[in-house]
Amino acid sequence: METGITILQSIGNTSLVQLHHVVPPNCGNIFAKLEWQNPSGSMKDRMALGVISRAESDGRLSPGDTVVEYTGGSTGTSLALVCSAKGYRTHVVSSKAFSQEKLDHMIAYGAQLTLVPYEGGHFTKQLFLDMIETARKLSLQPHTYWVDQLSNTDTIAGYFPLGEEIWSQTNGEVDAFVQSVGTGASLRGVATVLKRHNAKIKIIAVEPEESSVLLGGKAGAHDIEGIGIGYIPPLWEAGLVDEVLSVKTADAKDMARQLARKDGIFAGTSSGGNVCAAIRVAEKLGSSAKVATLMVDSGLKYVSTDLYRSV
Picture 1 (tube, rainbow, N blue to C red):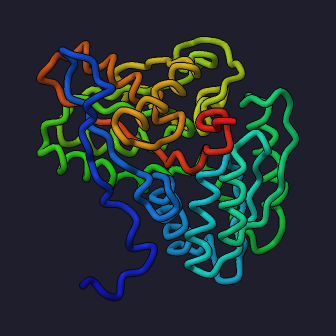
Picture 2: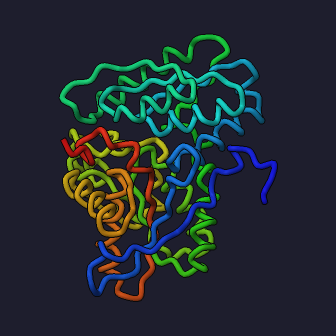
């Protein structure tokens, strides 16, 4: 029996599973990392641990400080988890536009919430800008560390282990990696590692078709939580990306439901979008190809939303 492990030591080393029933005939092989196996239920635990640990090591974060951040929920939940384990307070700026489960989860870890008003029930560029500005003002208070995930390069290194896991679990035979873009940190972190191992690996970025700014389109409202902020994120590194694919919100939601019903994989909307894009990539590369993607978070974070709500 393993003894002495802490909750933070349980972050990472998630399973890689092959998708079967949602993958069409004559399509390449698609493998998905089950990132909900991280303790708070999303890949963001990796980033949160990396960011907080680095801030501690160089003195930006000291005992008794409060960690402040803007977030749609998963980042805030992960930060609240790490901070609760390390003894810091957390103040999160979010919005009712995001699922109630995510807001409640942050509170369960002890986070203080400030909710920014929103209009229309969708995710827009203005909503993200309002959240950022609110967090910036809170960060002016003494004894406060502002994560500022959209501009913080520490977030990228938090995903280096994820890239190493994908490389190891595929025995170095991965042909492409597909990931949706919010801050861009997870895509950049994994791509940096995979390209270092093999520069021929294709890196595919995914964004909402309704707000396809990476492809040069206009910002628009969409319903894929956690991605598509309406402008090119500061951490975006175009040189690492071989292709950008856009996915409609409706298609991402439909795929998430199919994953649950056909493959027993219960994930969020962005994960459905990842699989939609991964199928297109795997069809293009051929039946012998191996394409890796992420199940970014658990469907349990969305049961009150129209993604899974039955009544």
